[in-house]
Length: 139
Image (tube, rainbow, N blue to C red; front, side):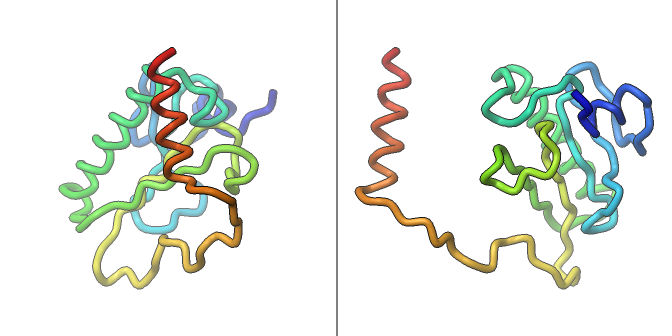
């Protein structure tokens, strides 16, 4: 497999914010804002469906640490945490990653979707999710 993020990690070819045995953070090539960082599991996991829960927990803990440091070191007023998983989500690199984007009230851009999904389904999707979650806990 030729994963872009795995290659960056293997070749030590990124601008590292922090490198760790389970999760790492680095600067993207085309940042959305000053200090924008990508947080990834250090080992290859394709997406949120593929990653073991303990690796996901460590990765999200690093997301929180990076976000917290953005508030102090960059004086960010907030952050957006963005991630996409699976082909229908516009995931750009098939290695689980979280964009941590520092935000300021004067930054003049939005990372919130401007439109609503056109996808429609029959029945109540929230009830379907709740039923599936309850069934998953029973097993």
